[in-house]
Length: 94
Image (cartoon, rainbow, N blue to C red):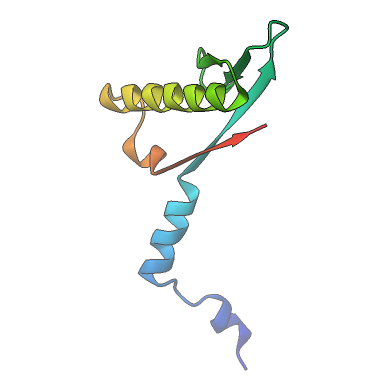
């Protein structure tokens, strides 16, 4: 068996698209913290200024995700980010 030929086999177009799609994923970490007054604050460190408060952890999480999406949409609309860079956006609460 010729292993060299197997290893150098060209990729199918669908596999190339999948790899390109996977490479264009953006995962944003959300830091959540409870303040001394009981409110929760969420922050996305990768997006400067994206912070939001909520009376519960869930409210802060929802508010900061919504704000982050607005910031990303604004960047797209004003040409500050290429559309291919934001094909797949996800958030992870830390």
